[in-house]
Length: 244
Image (cartoon, rainbow, N blue to C red; front, side, top):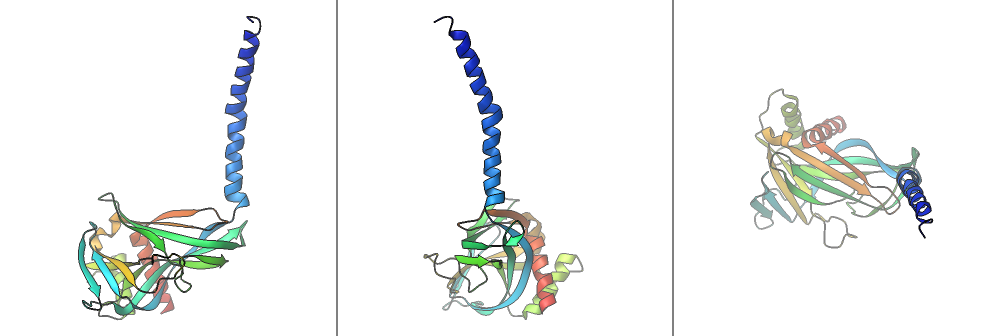
């Protein structure tokens, strides 16, 4: 028995070497291969802005601390029937830079106040196509990030004011309203303009806010990125003004 012990030690040392230096790296390589080479993925194409007429039945209004400060509805209207600037993230589903079919793709958006370290909003985001939350995508589609309501003004006038504010040319606005559609209970339904949540964001607090975005399908890797809210609004407004 004593003669076998040295051989057992050698065997265990060799086994440990295989686990540490051979098996583990192979597992990592396999995971990377599966995530980036075998599975399709989403790639950002652009941040876009376009006009949308809405007739929302109920809106909850909050501040940048996440506290509710008001509500809108048919009975207590503020602008439930209005035009909005729809800000979206254009995504392309591809495989080795070739467009590919993404099955049952869904998206998710969160608004984060970095200064207070709180998540103000997080939820599923609809796709631009008929505002569906689950969508089969061939090539490209836009994920709706948020709306900018055009209250008592034309959307183009608001966009020009926002452009001036964000570029430092002079700002006549104290705040900007950011609205997120709220998903129905059944995720297979589209957003029917039923419910939304809005945040009143002071212009001087824009630098504190971030958007975290995720998108994925049954046959794709998960796309995830984080953006400064100011950057997204700027890109959205620039694209909107080019289109309008």
